[in-house]
Length: 488
Ligand SMILES: Nc1ncnc2c1ncn2[C@@H]1O[C@H](COP(=O)(O)OP(=O)(O)OP(=O)(O)O)[C@@H](O)[C@H]1O
Ligand SMILES: [Zn+2]
Image (tube, rainbow, N blue to C red; front, side):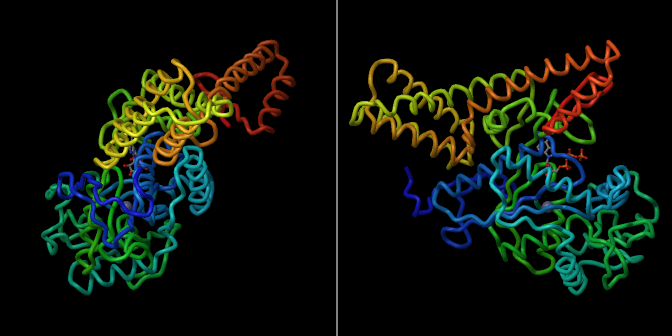
């Protein structure tokens, strides 16, 4: 295994900007600065969001394993993300605030904490810094002022726009130059811009706009893209190492981030990494399409580690198709690993002293294969295959006689380090939690059937009592048009 004090120099990653795999060379030896575009906190996260978070969590964990210190900054968007990507429509948080009769900031907090809970369950490490857009209005205003001073932005009607024509490099990440994203945009917004491709850095707040701040251009709020340029530079510095996000953010979001930072004279991210999408029935899982399953819903029925295993079983740059079959196979694959680990733990106390050379050699070669896979653009499916290879050899050795204690310990360490620390798969004891989830699910079926019978017999008091008792222990029951659903 790699010496943890010597940062491994042989990691290759796919850089979207260069459109190829390149060796990773950090700005500061032994350190990695990573920035990830985080969630807009206006609703519960779905499994597609989990794909992104787990993908970058594994990358971070791999760097740690290979001896790097990592500063991981992931922002929280709590202002400025409008319904329409082309600078029009209402703020997504404000729409939700009206629906739920809450303050926009209550919406942000509610869904921020819900996101934190989901990520904890999925064993995603907490970011080193989790900056919020509303906490960095001053930094965003300063960056906009720099852009105006350098002639790359202009004020118009109380809003400020980035002048795309002044920055010929705009479009270099995505290769998309002419998409103006102007469909369905109000005439007033169109008229304010010199070029339809110009994007908002600052927006004038209409009277009914709740989130508003003073600025040199009047009362308003920041555009969506500027927060990421300002906060990544603030916490990671000039020329930081890696910027990540979903593939769908390449344009316009990341393109705008780069233009804003570089046109203001800064050195921006040196590598760009993008995860592909989680799909269902071949279509991207998304809130707007309504084809999503929230992480909470999923975790009320399934072991979070099986969900995580499903996600790491495909490469971050590949599409992950979510289906019942994919889930069933993740479940049995995950069980194979945890059963092997449990078998080692069961045998360890009585194992004969000493090592078993043949199995030792196999543990080394599977460990090597795992690490090589991770060095090669974080190839998790290959890494998982190495763990399965280890499991096959371990099971064969265990089946044909006693394995020495030292070797069992080595095997255990390999599972816990590679599967646990790097892939993040063994939070708690996986197999037990999986069994737990199955028992809870079977019990809930019984309880809901009993409640249904009470209602059919018009025993409403009893039915309500059942529901109230469930509420007390944190289980919510909802009657929907498709039947009864529950979650905890
Ligand atoms: N299905 C998905 N697979 C992988 N990543 C996703 C998926 N859906 C969203 N993301 C990522 O999560 C981040 C935030 O997504 P967003 O809040 O726009 O979700 P969404 O469901 O796509 O919403 P909408 O449909 O309203 O655009 C983005 O970086 C995006 O790339
Ligand atoms: Zn961003």
